Image (cartoon, rainbow over the protein chains, first blue to last red):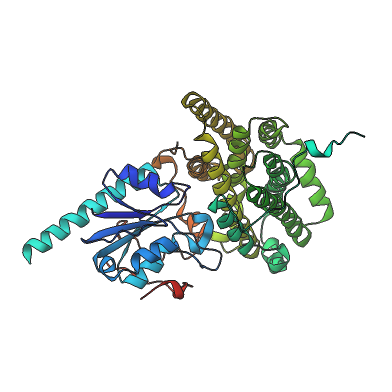
Length: 136
Length: 325
C-alpha cells in the first residue's frame, strides 16, 4: 500500500484518508506496521503553543523503524490554522527529521478541494516515480 | 431517624490514574500547557496605533470586542457549565471546568483591551450597544435556548461547538485584518491566544458529541444531523446580518463572509460532519490567513505548486528521547 496514516479517536484524519479513495495502512497506538514499499504518510498535528508533541507518539514509533523510514517519500499533515505558527507542524518536523518533502497541509478532516488536490498530487507523484523507475 | 445517606451514591474523588477516555487527559494537558492571562500581553504598545484609526474604525473595533465579550460570557457562565450534567467521565467534567474558566479569562481580556485603548464613556456605550443589537441578541438567544436546563445533551454540544468554532469569527476577522496592516499587533497577539483556545474547545466538544452520537439509533442520528445543519443555516443567516451591519461601512462585508463560510465548515468538521460551503466561497483573503497563522506558509507545499523544492523551516521543539534517529 502506498499510504499510511494515523488518526486519533476524533477521526479527522481517518475521514480525510477515507475520501481519498485509496487503500491505506492505519497506524494505531498499539500497532506500528512496517512499510516495505515506498509510501506517503498522513498524520495529524498535536503541538502545544511551543510546538511540543507535534508528532503523535505512535507516528514517532512507526518512523523509528529504519526500514519503514527508508520507504517514506513524503508527508501530508493535518492541523488547524487556529494554532498559528504551529499549523500542521507535524509535517515540518517529519520533513526535517526524515529529509522528505511536506507534500500538503489540510485542516481538520479536509475540504472537498483538499481531497481533490491531494488525489491529483498523489497521482502525479506515483506517475513520476513509475517514469523515473522505467528510465532507470 | 431514617438514614437518607445510604440511598445517595457515594461522593467520589476524580482519579487521574484511571482515565477511561484518553482524549480527556490529552485535552486537559493541551489546555493547561496553553494557559495564559491577558496581563502577559503588552497591550499598551498599541496605544499609538489606536490613534491612527479613524473614528469609524475605532467604533467598529470596540463594538466587535463588545460582541465577543458577550459570547465568551455566555460560554463561560452558561454553555460550558450546562454540559457538566452530561459529562460521561469525571475527567470530562474537569476539562469542562477548565473551558468555562478560560472563557471567563477571554471575556476579561477584552476589558483589558478596552481599559488600555478606550474611555469609560466609549466602553459603556459599547456594552449598551451589545445589549441592544438585535442580531447579536438573536444569536445569543438561539444558543441559550439549547443550553436551557433539561435541553437535549446532543443539541447542547452542537450549539456549543458552533459558538466556539463559528460564531466568534465575524469578530475575530477584524483584529486579524488590523494585524495584516501592522495595526494593533499586540491586541492581535492576544486574540490569537483566544483563537487557539477556541480551536481546542470546539475540537473537544465536537469529539464528545461524536462519541455520544454513535450510541444513538440511526433514526436519531439522522434527526440530530438535520438539527445541526438547520441550526447552522439559522445562525448563518443571523451572522450575515450582523456582519453587514458591522462591516458595510468599511466595505469589508464580502471578505468577512468568506471567513464565516470557512469557519462554518470547520465547525461542522469538528462535529464529524462534511463541510457545507464549497471552495469557491471559502477563499479567504490570504492576508487574513497569514495573520491567523504567521509563518505557517513559508514552507511551500509540494502539491500546491510554487516550485519543486522545499525549504526546511526554523528548528522546532521535538521530544528527542522518543526518536531513535
